[in-house]
Each structure stands twice: as structure tokens, then as C-alpha cells.
Length: 258
Image 1 (cartoon, rainbow, N blue to C red):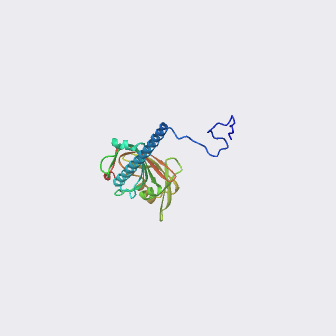
Image 2 (cartoon, rainbow, N blue to C red; image 1 turned 90 degrees about the vertical axis):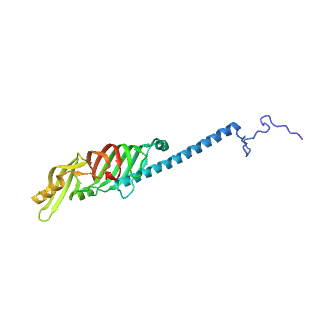
């Protein structure tokens, strides 16, 4: 028998109590848009991956060039900035590269003073040329010299002083006692660090101690293990060592630099 349907119930329309929800398939135009969006996303991800591989290779080559040029035991850490890197490589230079190296030796000098840590920011780093040489348009760098390394170079026990830009140097000799002096630290020409304005802080400066201190502090200490083209601009004392700030243009890292 035929049962008429209520006016508020439309034929073919789901009721709120129905368990299933019917969704019409997307229109062809919408499907095309989705396909294009997925393809573009895949291309973008692929481009990023390829660019990161290129950046990693550039970082590896830069680290290799620096290690070969400066004679470090370990390769430095290198980070290439900017995206995409591929276009920078195609142009023959990287816009900016940050490099951090540790324990740069200083062999063959009268008072060898190794660089405990060197942080370098390089602009316009050329990507062509041999693997054992790297050249940058301009560079800013900071060489950290630990008090332990400074002490070994000077033959004194060096530590941070009470005043700004000053260090304390302690020396002890049998039968001559022990003396501690304070000295000002400054940058001088020739990429050298000078110790001046020496003052006695503790003890008595007997002639044997005075002679040894004069020999250790009178002549500035050269930093000969710095890449060619860098110039010492300033020095600052810290709790654990001396920070030496360098700048330069047309800087080359190669074996002759060391």
C-alpha cells in the first residue's frame, strides 16, 4: 500500500539520524587544481632537497680548503647562508659563510701562540679554484686566545686582571720569591699583541724576576697563524682569555698563510 511522505522529508535527502554521509565526488576542475598543487609542492620539496645537498657540498669544500690552508687537526664547522645556494654557486661565489675552527697551530715562531678558537664571517667567498685554497672578498674574524695558551707562549701564569683590558701575570723563582704584575693588553701593527703599563700587584719585583718579566712582556707577541689579508683591529680581555678582532679584504686561506 502507498504511504505518502511527510512534507518536510524530501526524497533522496539524508536525515540527521542517518549513519552515512554522502559526499559528491570533486568536479574535474577541482581535481586538476589539487593535482597541480600536489605537483608544485613535490617540486618545491625536491628543489629544497637538491639545494641543501649543494649547500652541504659547498660547506664541505670550504672546510677542506681551510683545513688544508691553516693546518688544523680537525675540519672546521661551516655554514653557508642564503637560499637558494645553487644560484650562488652558479654565480661563482657565496654571499655569506660562517666558519668556526679550533686549535690553529703556531709552529716555527719564537714564541708560538696558537689560536684556541677562530670564528670567521666571510662575504663573497669564491667557489672556483683549487680545493686547498679559498678566497673571500671581505672577512670579519675573532681569534680567541685562552690564558693557558698565552701562559705557555710567555712562560708566565696569565689570568684576567682587575681592570678592563688588563691581565695579571704571575712569576715565581727559587730564592727570588713570587711576584704578580698587572699589564695592559693592546693591539699593535703587524698583527701583534702588546703588554704595557706593567704594575706590581703582589710581591716584590727583585732583579731576577724583573729581568724575566721584561723578556716575556717587553716585545709584542705576533699572531702568525692568521689567514693572509686579516688585520688586527682590537683586543679585549675576558674571564677565560683574550679576544682579538680582525677584519680584512681580499683574504686568502692557503698553506702560505700559516
